[in-house]
Length: 160
Image 1: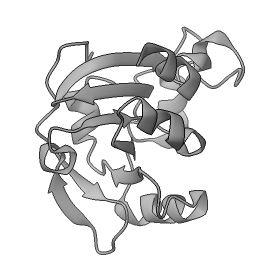
Image 2: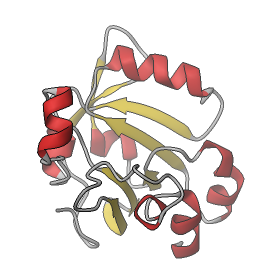
Image 3: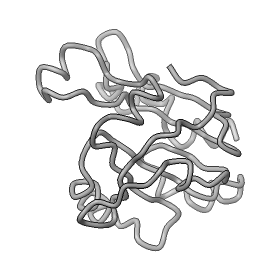
């Protein structure tokens, strides 16, 4: 699994703001900036910027059309948040964060990513948090519990 000090994977993702999908190399998209790769951080934009975060990327194993619709629903236009699609799981595999628990696999049929929060600076992982437990592979059985808290913005802000 991805660890602090690991380089940013050199994989292709798809921009979630266009259809047809626009493939782009993750390293070109990130471009050596200080970024957070994690969902749910729109409300904390001001605090993230004050800690030097330039961009927040939200990714999941899905196609660009779905990511684009999700981005629109979340109202990210004009924020530091950008949604990117990992349609073939290339990024998920490179980070070694594929969810392997049989429960979600039996429901979705395709591999999904674990819930992770990653902070990269100059393309090197500085913070790695994963929300998962033995009987909670998605880290969301208790939205206010300690497993989910690992990837929430408050925990990441405290570490920046």
